[in-house]
Length: 307
Image (tube, rainbow, N blue to C red):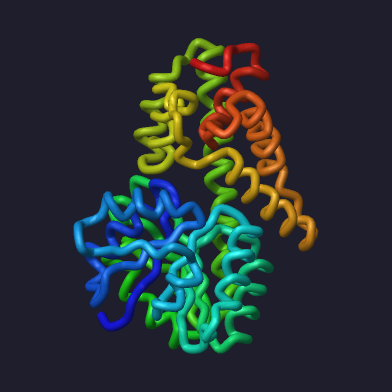
């Protein structure tokens, strides 16, 4: 594939995406990796196949050498700052294609599109669903929105490379992709809240967690079963590095609640889950994981946070 790609170097999630891009993306040039913390870019580079990637000293230099630029940052402020930096690159960004995989408010996504296209660049919003293990296995789900011609340029790097399936919103506003991502993430929040409450009442009523887990395995295979396993195994508090940080989950909840307020909708489940995530932050700090909602529910039910 002609062209050079710049990809983010953030956490295990981005490691999986970068690994699959270099191994299955049929890149004609080494992947250029950049991170605001340069050492993290070097660390990721060392974990990839030798000769398949290089490290740029800063994002401006990296983007100036690239034709397609993938970004994935943790919050709205970070991606806005990054895109503003790209827009100021000497020589300009006209003709470059930017692909943002960040989970941000749809208004932020539309603002990014306006900034980039006003400088002559193309833009595709491409948030993804899936945990780090799915990123590692190339089993994410990509949601793509923007001009159809631009989306077509990104598709070769999605299904069969970083994803198992695409949700294609070609020729729809860029913000539709992150609108789905934010609403979709409320399903995950509500799932974890339901499992946390279910396992807590199962323990206190005498049903037992193993018996409830058998029901979940039978009726709800897939994510419900996986998260149920995380709860009963204690994985929700034992991890040094969260799979889905409580801080990021609360950011998504805030976006969802903002959208709900704007459109006159009540999302009571999200409000409850967000309250429990606040308890998780208070108990676990930066190590807090979305699955820690179980510990918060346990505590308010008279049990210890840790099972």
